[in-house]
Length: 173
Image (cartoon, rainbow, N blue to C red; front, top):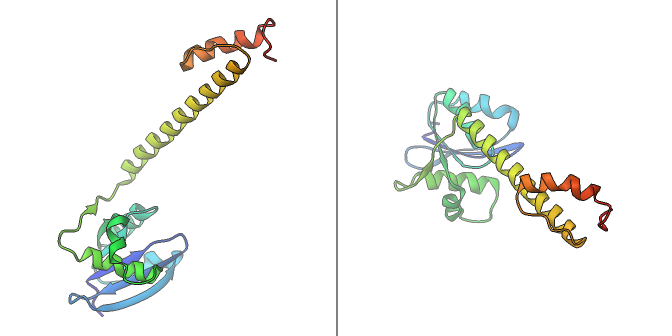
C-alpha cells in the first residue's frame, strides 16, 4: 500500500482518512480517534496530507509536517463541489483528495504558532471593542429614556456617567 495523497476530514473526536495511490485508486479508508491520529500518520510513508482549512487544521498541519509529510490546506468552499453523494465524513475525506488532485486548486497557507497568536490577539481585541461600543450605546439609550442626552464616545460617556448618577434633579434612579 503506497499512499500518494492522504485526505483527512478533521473533527473534534473522530477523524476520517482517505488515501490514494499515484493512479488515484483508493488504498486506505480508515476512521481514527483523536488520540491515535498523530502516531498513525507519523508511521505512514511520506506523502501529501490534505485537509480542509477549518478549526484545528493549522495545528494538525504542523503536527504532520513535523512527521515529514507535505501538508496542504484547502478552503471548504472548494471541497464541497467534489462531494459525490450524501455528506458524511468518509465522503468528505474522499472529496478532499479529489479536490487536491486538481492542478488549478488554490491552497490556504498554513499558519505558524506566532501567526495564530497575533490573529487571536486581534480577534479578542476586536470583540472587546465591539462589546464596549455596544455597552456605551446601551447606556446612552437607557439615559435617553430618562431624558438625559449623553454625547457619543467612550471618554464622554465615562466622564458624564458619574455626574448623571449623582444628579438628584433627574428621574434617573
